[in-house]
Length: 58
Image 1 (spheres, rainbow, N blue to C red):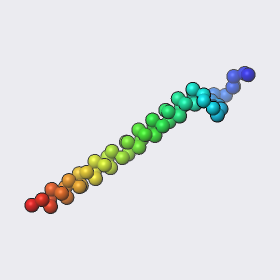
Image 2 (image 1 turned 180 degrees about the vertical axis):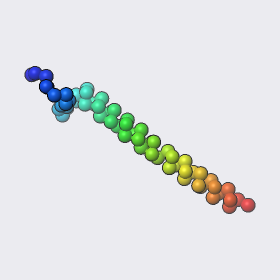
Image 3 (image 1 turned 60 degrees about the vertical axis):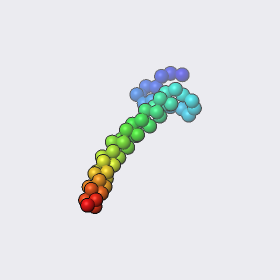
Image 4 (image 1 turned 60 degrees about the horizontal axis):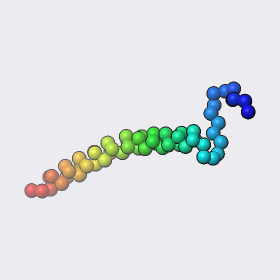
């Protein structure tokens, strides 16, 4: 089998170590993006919740 002439990587179905490493890298990247989006939203909601709870405690 000769090496591919173009620079595309072809991953065949199966338990290829390259496919597993690539899938893990994509999964880690997706989780990092999800955390990057969700953490600021959670902080803003927590600040709003604490703002309302501090004003009602008189």
